[in-house]
Image (tube, rainbow, N blue to C red; front, side, top):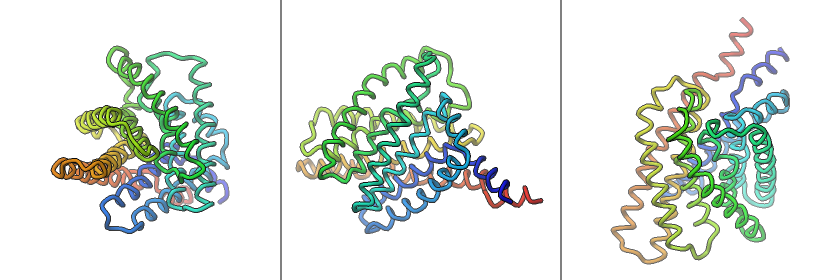
Length: 319
């Protein structure tokens, strides 16, 4: 029985951390509509925490699997979503415990980032790049969106600009790789959806920790974010036809953070006293993206439940 339990945890796909991130962020995003009084955020955080605990058990029982994941050119780039999801959960926890969890998640993310860079620099080849490579350096900006503020504000600022600079450097390289190099392998194609995330995440992080945002930078990031999200909507026509794999988790967070960024821009527009019609358009866009994100996250969660049902697998092993 003990071996069955250990084997069951060993079979848990590491990209499930990306689903945890998407679910936690989705609950948070729904708070923007003003109907749930923190309930949606808490529900998303609880579900995400359960998924993270399952992955924690996997890594503790099978640390060699974590080492293997970190060495992998694709899976290694999504391992940091574990830390990113923990950051979002920390925001729901709040208080000193939440701040401690936030700091722990940042430290963990940085460890994953350094490990990923070390493995990739040993044998860097441009055609090895896939959009999930954005996650280790730019995903740290989730810490800004979840920042407790106060004494941690300077740290949040450093992390924000680190992520934005990394995005500015990596985006041209990634576009060149996708256009001029070999096609992304089928197994890694779901990561193409991650192209929608960095600009939206940078925008959301910037508006969260910056008291007086620069209009030009907001406009640039907003333009890139909306364009990338629209392109990924079109890409879904083919991406959703791919055979299901744990990589489907890549479909979740990019759509959620896109909606979150638009809600933040709409709030900024209200603060600046912009035209009411423009503000309403931003909110409609944000709500539309939120509905689409909810449908996609629900679909991916259902497919994970169907394909990685621990109870069903346990019964099959006992039989």
